Length: 454
Image (cartoon, rainbow, N blue to C red; front, top):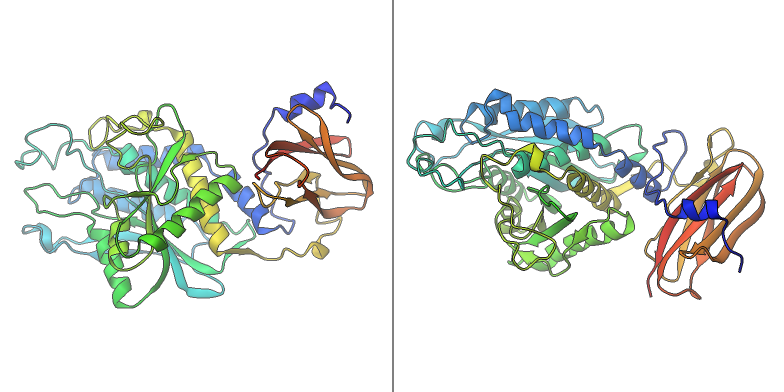
């Protein structure tokens, strides 16, 4: 075996996670998903969180306050700006057990629909609540009725982080420049009135999701699964996220839904530390409403539950939970980005297709640049497919190396015509571990990693 040159060893240390976004070439679904998750913007996430935190200048999104209403308008305006969505609408509901006059004040969910192309009546619900609270601030006047209208409840993490992720998902998955098409419908929902009401106003929580779930059950809607994305951004040391289910008759189906997220985390390198099946049990978010109506439902959250970190080395109990100190400066934006990518990858894998994955449709006019795609599946045992593109007939070398720089396989060594090409790599003679595959063509060099699991 020959050793890799020093310059190549340097390249091997650079983990190129995602290909660049391309609109012209036909791609496989996996390629498209990698492109979509590469488009997740930390800048967009931060802008959404800051806007929601300010809440029209009130710095509170407590139910029945002007700030909460301002947030609903902002969310709808953002969703309306995405031309690829099928529809964006308010879903109005009331809280009849609230005291007068609040029991007659309309509340809203904001629902954006991306309609499926094959089975439009089957759909996923991906939801994040947009109201906030400050009921853990130790302020005795909260429940006596003196300050719930005026107290600051910025809710940057709970749940500005989840709403920001939701808006990025909707933007990217509906973007016409990606050749992504959902075969089944996706509903992106910003839920109102998830947090418990201030005691002087009434009791209860999860009002927006209860309304939607009950309406769906009355219509006998075919909901494939519901995912609640709720407070996903507090962790000072690790990029950790947890899956939570309701321990009822939907538990088994919900575990299967959660397992798709764990698999997506592995296959698309979102690099999150996650818990595993059978997952934690909990009813402290909007997933409960859908599980109660007989739909597979999970919660994606920073820990399970968020106020406890004693038994998890990857998480310290969130000291800002439901407090005035829950501001954007304490949000781990990289964590929010990766959870956003995880949701895109998991949902797109389950419902998505592309306009075409026929390599015969590629030609030298369509392929505009050299490119090496992420292998699929990944991790794998024993075989995986590696796709690469060359814009002109040229000499190509596609090789595999271990992390010590030793060559362990050659897939291509010679002239290759312009277009898109796929090679299958057989790792049955390799040990479990991480390897690097390298493409050299047209005077350029590209590298990616894959994982062999045995």
